[in-house]
Image 1 (cartoon, rainbow, N blue to C red):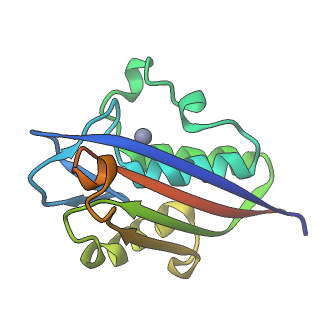
Image 2: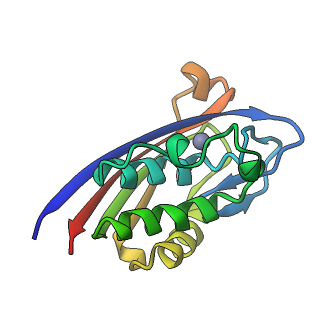
Length: 159
Ligand SMILES: [Zn+2]
């Protein structure tokens, strides 16, 4: 069995009058993330980790933000399409590990739901998708609450 690893990173700016979507879950907060899609920074980092593991470029290559069809798109759709493209290339997901970097709000209460939603889309066990959260100790753009960042690694296996 051949295994491969991939890494993903994404960042989005916080803005007023936007819903906050993370890991496919809508979270109550004073601001939301801004972007061409729903700006789900966690899903985007996970898509990039999966695509990178399969050497299939990145999320912007597959779903360009100049394409009108992706305007305000639900990132869960992008995650499902990412699974399709890696499956077409003969890969199955081993496991995913991700970290959200955000000063506020508290992520821990939402993590089980994120795991459930994304595991269902990716057709894996909730045990194979780990989500962690950290603040930036008030330093940098995350610390100043200008935006959120997310990092992910994914292991995939050639079937
Ligand atoms: Zn993004």
